[in-house]
Image (tube, rainbow, N blue to C red):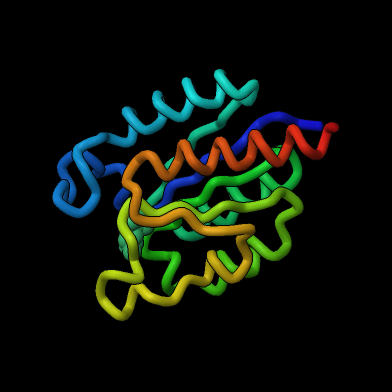
Length: 149
Ligand code: DQA
């Protein structure tokens, strides 16, 4: 079985580091990628890390992950709250999905309270900043270890 976890990031996450640091923290997406790579290595996993501002490209990436990844960690940014196309791609996805958000959308504006991603995900990790990605890698590592026992 593939031991690769695909980490997919949606719109505006390329701006991390300078985008509302009081909400999203000061780590850049490159910092997060490096931390994820290190944690995955410790846990015997590989990662592929992507960011796109385009909804269609995110759908394409989920379709690709479905065929080749052991799991998907998805921070879909604002598409989380709007995209039925993403929901459809996720329910068709053969790989399990963990939703991650740096902030806690439930504690923010009402338009962030609903998540099309959560409806198709194994679970959601929100509000722990960049550490949320590492928690998701640990969750997949534990699940995959159990599955191969
Ligand atoms: C976010 C939360 C979303 O509501 C927002 O649109 C983002 C970032 C987060 O990681 O906290 O772009 O996904």
